[in-house]
Image (cartoon, rainbow, N blue to C red; front, side, top):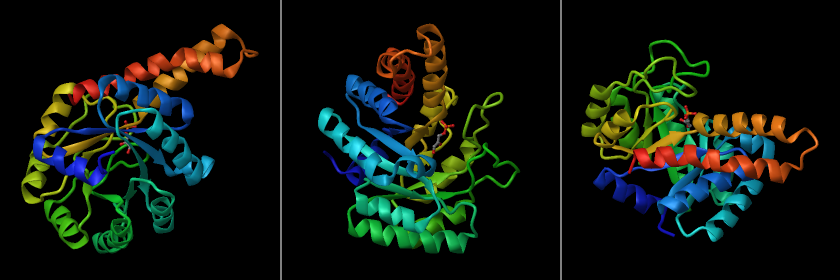
Length: 272
Ligand code: 13P
């Protein structure tokens, strides 16, 4: 399997883009990998710390290790939005391909200092690190101070040697109310100022033309979560009503995986 750092470097040069999907269990992992295999593209599986708390780093790593063997496309495992240094380092030790240290809510100096600690540890073991500057809106993050300052991104990039940077440019986690307002001018300024792959968070609901436009401005990874868990839970809820509460879980869950897979495939098409 190609190393994630090599893939990102290649995508950074060619305006191609990796899609990272938040996953919650072994079923949605399967749907995500199936869609990637069908399309024959690499894919990233991203665990929020809530999922780590529920299942453990070792279990998540073991699930994804099995999927890496089962599928022919590269499958990368990533720890998403973690502000706990210890957990980031543990994920590196367990064998994650990538970890995100999210110090976006900290003063810049603190964010840089802690990101650098994670980078130093992770790079020694060949693991990729994502950092964040500015804020991703939604899920309790509101207010107007979300926009990433170009000078902050430059400072963080230069002082940490981080592999990819999530930038606050107006996107939000969760479902958008209305059309997302993305500050493409700021994205372009950042892209021109740093030679680092950039990450677009809050992928759910961003129109295709906006996604495609962002790829020409340094975005090398897009994160998608809500679209997948919504497809999973809504379809499962409906299927349980049809099958009855005494239904056998694997049969009922398997019936709805094609719908989850379809949602995954939508985003793979958009970056194609
Ligand atoms: P959505 O859940 O809005 O798609 O965002 C996912 C994300 O950015 C994870 O880091």
